[in-house]
Length: 198
Image 1 (cartoon, rainbow, N blue to C red):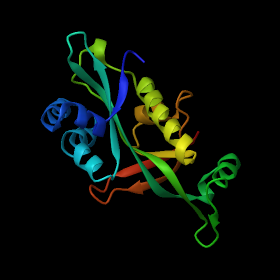
Image 2: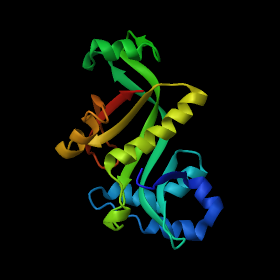
Image 3: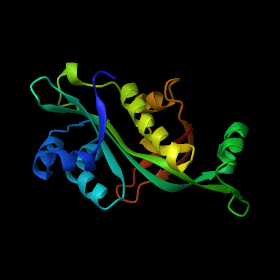
């Protein structure tokens, strides 16, 4: 994986202390998604302390003992509604393993893993960067480990309706599929909701 490993932000806090961790996080840059950048720099540690979600720092140790933050992903567990009308028969059969259809609303209420934040650090030299597919592989490495201990089998995420981002999530490597959309209460942006079974 290009020499990168995913480290739970709480483990990093114990290893290097809060001051050094905040310094590492302050170097994270994601100009294409300011929301991700702001979360990493200003909220990720607090959210982990409150057990709202956990951010994983994708780091590379350099020969000089320094650490480079190449990317991040944030995971949580959350309930999500999936409309019965927007899905294929295959998805419907898979969903029935994890949820029951609410006949009244015609929706499945599913407890699923959420990829809440996902991004590469644009503030690192190219030789220390990580590809989106490598970052997703690390994400699913953690999810499969958690799945082994607690079960579950569906993961979802929200993303803006931007062709390049959708192509990445829906590629043969990642295989997410659109199942709905939501409007953000914070900024009134429209987000597409994508799911994947694993």
